[in-house]
Length: 117
Length: 132
Image 1 (cartoon, rainbow over the protein chains, first blue to last red):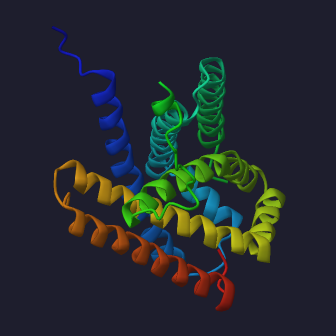
Image 2 (cartoon, each protein chain N blue to C red):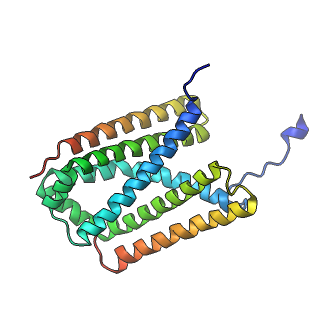
Image 3 (tube, each protein chain N blue to C red):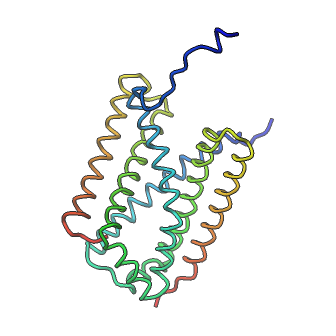
């Protein structure tokens, strides 16, 4: 007997936990953005200072990771439900998987390189 | 054999009247796929907005356009629908609201809440002149 949860349970859990983080992030940062900026036009300096702040920066990176994990479980379910041809299914899973990994690295690179002016 | 082979199959999805919970389910999937497809574009906007003052003003100008506003309202509607439907699925996972009558009421509630959010977004972005 393995102590590890089965793949199905693990995906179910990843899907729900990432959904909760995405929702909390959108609520907290959405309201903060409205409260801090209050509909005023945001300058480049303010935007960059905000994104480069350690708390925001790490929360944003975690957000993108949660988003991509959530998207991966979701798109995987959809592909496995509707794409009957096995070769096509694998081609699509590999394409989406690689593009999600690329997007994770792309965002990580973008966000980690941001410094306050 | 011929009896089973010649059975009429009625699977024209456009002519079957779907229960409202099925509509919530399929919209959850469609909105999820469309938001995934929008991701590279959004990451590109994030990168450009942080790259230089020029890049930032390009992104601001782009987001200020009518097409981007329309696009943003659609995205907000999809996100709201996906979120409310997701919360409904999470509650269903805990065996709450599984009966037919309750489940179709909560399904309607998802549609209505998402439509209200979309209407507020449309009002704010398309008619009141607020910028993104």
